Length: 230
Ligand code: ADP
Ligand code: ADP
Image (cartoon, rainbow, N blue to C red):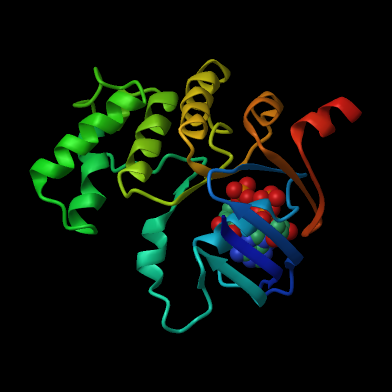
């Protein structure tokens, strides 16, 4: 079942830079799509259009059957359903791991403190941080902070998770622990769109690889076909 349908998407920034050129892509429920391409090819811009951090200049994007451009579409509701994990973890420094994961479910979803606490504990357990729940971000490694950020996104019960170079800011020894969490999510059936340079992850976890170059989507391929033909 298609969850994200992007058709002929163009994005031209006010400075004239065309970051996306006629990008069309359909992503189905439970699918893991990895986007690859050189720096400046539009990968990040494309992800950002999917959760409305950027508006598009033309074309259409539908998520779960809802047209993002439709005036009646509730963008805040949509952002809840489309989670995003960034290169920089952006945790609130004055809140513990648990506090970071509980915040949005209480403020945005209106969960009670008890509910939010229970689900935050479960999520932190799931990302392997059961013994770090009361730590402030400054006392967590980069890999641990990024796992908190993933738990925080999951707390909103998103239909899809977008990852924008989630391991690029990490020391090499911490990349694996974050990729392992992402791999588990994929195995549990989470729909994911991932911009990454981690080819091992792409090969092992992706259902589909998408290549971008100068704003265009130039190739879609299964990992089997891609890695065997190159
Ligand atoms: P990638 O993620 O593949 O590195 P980006 O999506 O970040 O590529 O950028 C695509 C192109 O759009 C680049 O040429 C970049 O400089 C440009 N760009 C990105 N954001 C903006 C912006 N806010 N204003 C103008 N140009 C931008
Ligand atoms: P990334 O590597 O994550 O794609 P960048 O370092 O390219 O991010 O850009 C960082 C921020 O600056 C982003 O919010 C992007 O939209 C913006 N940006 C990138 N290129 C330009 C540009 N040419 N003009 C204005 N803003 C830009």
